[in-house]
Image (cartoon, rainbow, N blue to C red):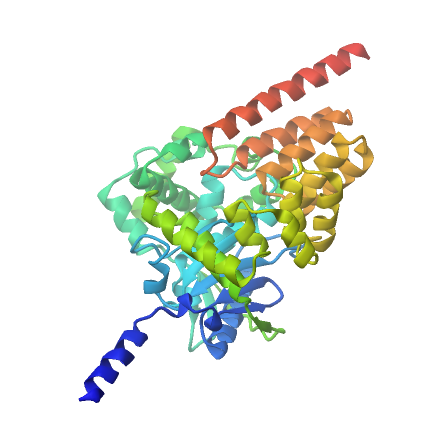
Length: 468
């Protein structure tokens, strides 16, 4: 009579998500990724290799910087979609966001290989183009990312291909025809207020625009992208496509939709065999990570239930380690405990700085421990400038912008310090780039603040020139 009870117990255990047990969690590091997962070790190593191979394939297929990447991409991969649905609404393939310390991370499930992970390819494309393009109009950034979603590995020929038309997007555009593709070129921050359907329509219009330019004018498109490393996109577009007025774009896209041919790029698929270093994740860190994922909960409405789930994980994290920096950040705890117990963790010092009005000493220690963290170094730059160390501040702000050229907050700080140093032309251009780079999730107050800052910089520069 005990066997059925034992069987029921085993079945119950089988349905407990692996992600709830810290003993299952690993952190693996490769050349370009920090990979945290509850997959078994062999599967985790294979997933990291696949990520590196996929990134290398995107570099082969895409437009990218010749400079080596200075930062690693953080990826959280859960063992299956059911585990992902604990933190994100059902049917969401994955999501990209900032953690509690504003470190960007991609959160995915392991149900699909790289070639089938459109979200992953889309977001990695953004990472790559952020390192390459100084100026990124929305239509171009989204169009390129959507174009690169079509990257596929051909198993038998061992080649990669990119440029196939997305059946899903084509069907969408057939059902909801876009009459004016030129409008996508002029879409700015209003894209942030679009609902899901309108947002997908904008993405799809941008995707087909990029496809059209790549398929019909590939050399001009390449030169256009190269110009964006040094000049505004409208001027670059006029120079490379002088005949493409809005009306010409409308008629050209209409003809392309009817009869256009597609350029499929193909190349040998790159291999990857670099070093992977793995270690077990600390129990408190796993609980704190889960708490942070519950905090984010994309697709779920804010509720007492979601907050209770987060708080339960925070309590477990603090029980395992009362000084865990992430748990203290989420709970509002005293950062001095983190500094005392985890002085080699940059987050401890960053948290202490945050609670101490960004004091230079704490920020300097955090930056020394995280020398590739552009946003952190930008905060140090501003703190140094505010304390009278303007030369050091500007040097650090320039370094921060090298590390994180697509971050609005980093560009904003560099713009301010350039203005303080009298570099008006650079300051105005940088502040405009900071406005353009604001993420779609940015609060309306952030847009207002940066526009006011741009006006202030212009007034400061005019006043300075008049005094001369």
